[in-house]
Length: 489
Ligand code: GLN
Image 1: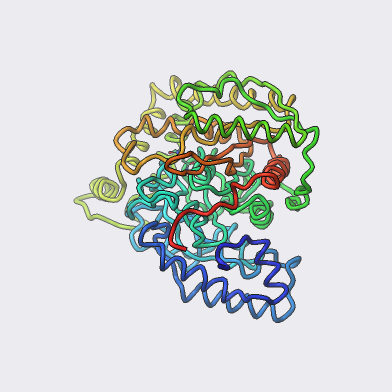
Image 2: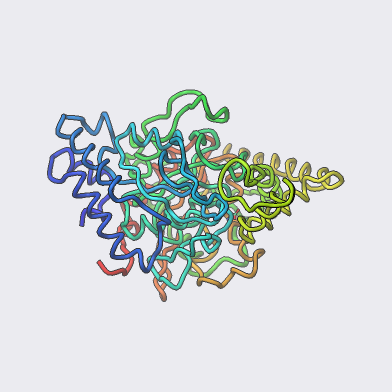
């Protein structure tokens, strides 16, 4: 089945004219029709528009456009509902945006189009990217393709499930505290959160502006490298994007990792770590040793403060960013007796419970009298957390951890216990606080039920090449990334 192949496999077939972009797009749409009833990765998709883009890609191919010129030519890539795509609905998994249609393309979307990709679909997510299970979507939950009674992770749960279920070839997600890596781990795909500044966020609806990054969810490391290469680079419209052009990330995929130093943090050996997850990560560490990497013990002493720090900074920024959803400029409006009443009614009806909780927490930590005690302190701790990582990176090239303390949990299992849900981010959020890059890749399965386990690699600022090199080398000697969920085939 064409929809089961990777970008690089399909790009070869397209260039040799063994298949057409239309055939690939049709294979994805057929698959969506067959499995969406049980997975619900998409909030919506426009099949006619996707087929039109595919036909245009085929005309480019006939005209002689090569893979070197357009590395994603004719490849269907689906988009998380938090990124602006011109003419498409933009809801962020929320009701508050109503019938809003985006008037412009995000920079990453422009870049995907320049690279030739077929940009399609609105992938389900936790409302405004707040969550770890995709249960907070106003459009209903997404289900894990490996076991549909379980969550796919979040907040980019739709992106991970769609890639794992072969409904698209790759997807974009966003990651503020783990939202690309954790669902990638729980669904068995590769997810990469780039370094802060690597990818422009112009056209990404902001959750926490000092933490948000856009990145790929893909079937293997090479595909993640291809998508990252396409979306990276400086953009004058995002002042936090760094100057200069991004490297060719596929050049790092030569299998050579001998002599690289991998750090194991003693603070990450936590009590709540599931036994099978721990064993799979241990086995991966041994594989890396076999490949010639050197394992070094490191310390990240402020790890215990990461979750608390994150939930102060992220909620503070969210309360400011989400102030714009007031029923005046766009989205839904619930009329009121005066403007304040209108805001209250609109926001009361439009936002879900988790978003309200975060806005209230964020407004509280920023309020006068509490600002110094919470927000300012959290900023200081954040600096120390970043320093921990930079110190560790004096000794090692990358850090190896589990992505999530457990495999996918049951739908509803943690829905009433926000603190339990927040704690499932323990291994992923420090990366965003430190502004470094992180990647999750499949490293095994639990026995019964069979659920994917993710391995996380954390890298130096702008060290994405090292992460991709490490992930690719591991894939060459392990079968995990090739396994498919037991859905109707
Ligand atoms: N699960 C985390 C949260 O709920 C991270 C979300 C994200 O990365 N967008 O905030």
